[in-house]
Length: 319
Ligand code: GLN
Image 1 (spheres, rainbow, N blue to C red):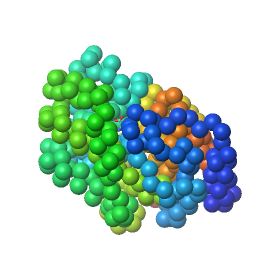
Image 2: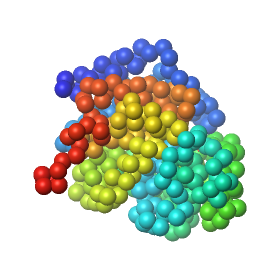
Image 3: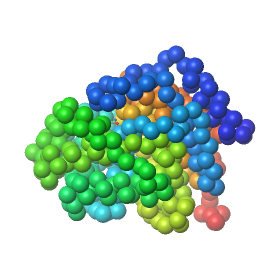
Image 4: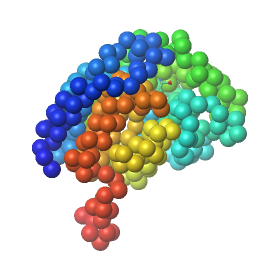
């Protein structure tokens, strides 16, 4: 493999010159104002080395990538009982779709579509009021990254709160089925603030390290989730992390990944790397266009794939 830093520099250089950059998400007021020319990439490897290129230290709105972390927290508090309220199947529909909820009795297909993440926010509220729940969420992210400067952009949250009619519809609809248990305003307030987390690629790649390392925080050696749970979160990222483009992402990139409408993607090469990319322009399915292209380029050079033969060792050969 060529030097990873050179690979990232090449990718950032090529992406800076790309003319087709996708469309910015403009339904969230603050996101509409982001400069579409940004591109950043960060890789943290299993030895703790960090490689950065482009705008890797410019913060952006993490949005739906936070659903990986809220799912992790909810599994920690509720355990597998969570799966009675949220499914584990790809939806094949858009991230904010409402259509399946009627036939499926208010049980969202998976935790990564909006409806699923709204249920997760409701689950997290079982222990605290929204303010404490969000504070706990930020604390969790700060622990994962080892970075206390990470905050929520309240302006982004307020903007979405004022215009997020679809999410209001989803939450009310699920409340009618009894799958939202707290007042809808509190659940959505929690969800919108969670989505408005601001991070840069370097911080995001750091936050994903426990998923690269089988559930263990490599910095502290502390178990964030069990290895089985880490594998399952990754399985959901692979099958559901890009909504109705999850199959295409698995085909092209071959790594579990989670996108957000801010233009970020977190991708994990188990045992090898935690990768974050950011380019604000989205494709028709709401996923970062250049982010995905950059990851395609990266895996071509590195060979990282969960489908590559070395990924599975015989039980006898396990360390
Ligand atoms: N906050 C956004 C929403 O609910 C998150 C969507 C996303 O990132 N795909 O619409």
